[in-house]
Image (cartoon, rainbow, N blue to C red; front, side):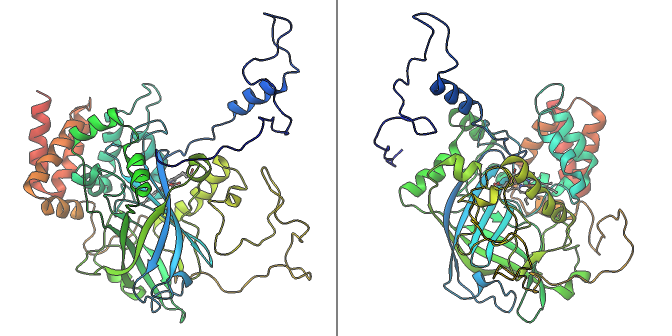
Length: 489
Ligand code: HEM
């Protein structure tokens, strides 16, 4: 650890500032006697210690973060009016928290698991959060399935462990997961570090320009460090030897001035083309093909400053897919729509109603102005300002300018499935991905998948799981069936 931190000179004090005479012996009723309730130093210290933890994130509990700079490198004003994207060369401060998904806070980094990619842009029009992953797609396409999915990734209520039966039962009954599962068990399923992987906004978002024209956009962050992955064997070893491998790698690289960076690219679809695209562009289990919508490079992201206090700046950091700025908005993707609710709700539970006021979370390039007040942890920042709107005392006022453009809709409300477009089914892109892999990578994919599937205790679940891969690609299914049969001999 190369950073040096100063201690404040002066005597130890209680929280109320009174000097502490003895921090090593508690106060007893006579030599060898029981302790006294008047020992404020002991009581305050024990009570504070009991309250050190806040609830860990229900997913993505393990993470590491760093501050950085986003720089615009191409003119995108014809697509969005977002001010932080308005000029080539413009810089915006950022904070990025990487994470793994399924493990709890005390787990290990080198796991086969998607990596979270939560990026906060501190823009002059408010904070814009892009809460994505290192994968362009996801396992499911409707938010209502997310808690069930995560329950199968976490600990079983009876055994207290992750169970192959639960994982494969759910995936095999949710064939839309075949694409993401193929991705996850391929080489990119265990990145060597947070620096050696790409990031994605994953969902489709709306961009809207000054003239009100709408575009659909997907974000890609291409690592300038190059993609580097771990094999399953390498990861198993590293997870045991250095559970904090990703976190350490990120901190140390920034400490030595080797700042990691990513080339920022977008795919842009004019709004009118969405209805007829070969895949439903709002289905999170699908990518848009690069040949249909080529990636355009628009910026550079560099991480160059470590947080000084992990609890304050990483554990208490909050990111919400609902944090938009003028010129950027949601798409009707059913996953994204559910997430627009879930994160603010999680923050209020996990960090409290004033989580947005903490230094890492509040706007840095503007300030929050509204009538929200008080609550646990409120710091009195508004002084005597009026706490209502409209007011005639010069208080903040509404703009009348929605952040994003309205969607045209028709039809009835209902529990509708995500509509299928001409080439949509649950398997087509999984098959494409399998066939894109080199023979070596296919071998590793089959070995990784079969090793896990072979742990399932029920034949019907195994058969159903393999059938999904066979629908993606016949060879894929056949090879997997043979490998699982071999392991279960
Ligand atoms: C409807 C589906 C989803 C729900 C309900 C959901 C819910 C949550 C919740 C409750 C948290 C913890 C937030 C906190 O305590 O601060 C979280 C964290 C996170 N989620 Fe999701 N999630 C969903 C899907 C996704 C998807 C599709 C992605 C990526 C494409 C994603 C990426 C992340 C990331 C990166 C974090 C960690 C944020 C951080 O670093 O603080 N989630 N999610």
